Length: 93
Image (cartoon, rainbow, N blue to C red; front, side, top):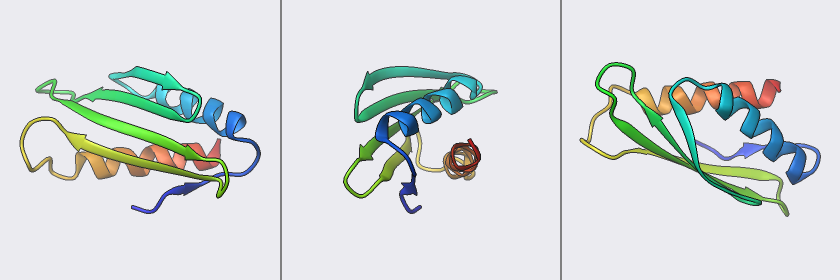
């Protein structure tokens, strides 16, 4: 997936992303730095942990991200669907 563009300041975008993540079910913010966030999400049924990382590029006003399962190699598209939902809520924010 492509990075998420944002308008306004990095601080505004960061606050918007944090609001989206705090409202996301079974999500815990592990590292919260000015230009980086590390987040854990647990699956609903088996409680598997997925790691998400977000990095702000203030110069190009892009939010880079990655999401990966800690266990296994196939997740039925859960990570992609989650990231698409976070992207959608962030952009609507």
